[in-house]
Length: 253
Image 1 (spheres, one colour):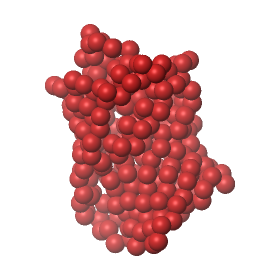
Image 2 (spheres, helix red, strand yellow):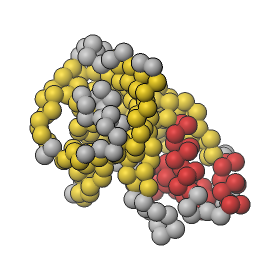
Image 3 (cartoon, helix red, strand yellow):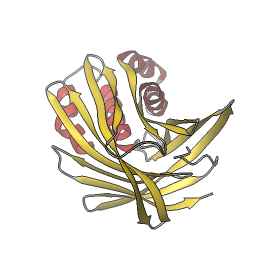
Image 4 (cartoon, helix red, strand yellow):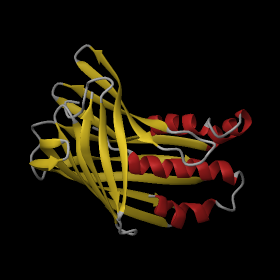
């Protein structure tokens, strides 16, 4: 996703006004689009638990984690807040968590793969570390999001059944980016990772990004386990060609 930013979004914005603010916004946005992948009953609901992952992009290997930040029960529903670790991108910023929502009710797990409201809150929170109050006010006025992309998981989904499509729009005045998803359920599969062996629900979907005259599409395969969440994520970009694999390595209570 960083390569995607460098080839497409950066050239389009480099001559615009308030470029420093805009550049930081879009860079954060690209990071979030690549980092976000949720993990309730196809998600951990143990507050404070951390799930560690090895991320392999080409030949580059890094480690990241997702933490269960909050669990709230309302009547028969459970609402989970996850935090995906994001390292700082420059000295003015700091390491932080990008928050994501998951809901569980009636044996259904709803994973917010992309959520405009959460994304805006995350970006504004991170930008606050790098901008003064005046610049922050100006930046907020230029940025808006709308829509959501969700993944519904339960035991009744059959192989070949379509995932409900979704779309989210991100506007960084005067530019608009659209992210859309479509895919299908692939049944169940048992996979082995350094964290152990897991019986998983498997899904495949495409995530398409449109930005001015540019568009790119990523093909994603994911495996989710009960009580854990995301066990493995594989992604390849149609234009960039590079494959990214994210694998669960350990669970820490």
